[in-house]
Image 1 (cartoon, rainbow, N blue to C red):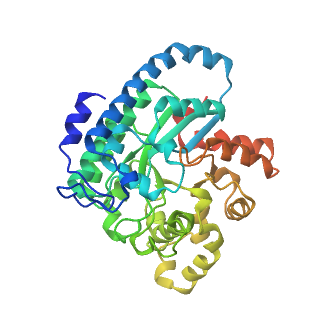
Image 2 (image 1 turned 90 degrees about the horizontal axis):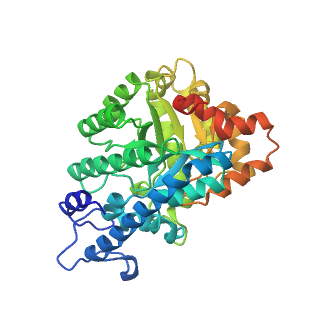
Image 3 (image 1 turned 90 degrees about the vertical axis):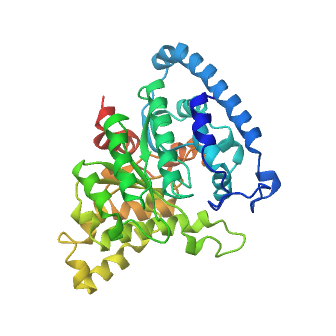
Length: 384
């Protein structure tokens, strides 16, 4: 691993899965099997980084041959990265949130991701951090982690031109920190957009506290990718049922509803929002939300074009959602032009979405639009 990363990361306090500093005995609520000492993990990360450099050199030599032999088309807008700077800081939280195959998370590398993309006919992946994002452990730690991860992602894009893009992480509750990081990421690192999660400390993104950041992103006509998380209120409601199974879907609906009823969508029409997993529960609750707006004049006044207009202009990816119920609900809410391809890799194998879209009777034009065409309207640098 680059000594620069190690030096910077060693300055950060050790944190447990809940964001609290570990005591002198390194105790936290996870099982011993889920933990690793800092020294052991630094050594493991160093080996992984060294392997990444070797694989990168191999990829550079093979790149021309692969480009000539393979016709890649898809653009994956929901593709997670778990870089060493992030896993050194957030590993316990990453594993605690996920009930998926942890080996795919622990063994993530850019080169491994490219191999998966090749098999799934993915030309470019617009990447974002896995959960929990950067907002834990306080504002200062979040600012540092966002900067480390955004610089890592920018370097990854530089090393693999046109194979990767990235949504930059920002610590949204820290408005000053978010404004500074968004400026740096978009202007200097050339990020493709900004990544947020669906809620922060019991606040959803339509909260008035977050308006300065959305105003700036609207001025920039930025792309904003919002990934679901599990709000603190609902983390352990049903024993034996991972919160991600249900709460991801409903927290996406809460985030969209928050942005809708508080007028964020209408006040900032130049932001291009992308929501995950076919909009979660939003497509099947949209009619009830519309009825709410119609019953309350104060909300209706914030939506001069009506709630249906605002919901239909959003973008929705189909990661982990190519099933009959999710697709039917989404396609009854929005036109095909608003649907984007996404895989949720490495949490979900990329082939799940790639193969799943073939079962809905979509025309070749609609499939091409979802796979690639719609995304090129959002990320115009990928046209051609």
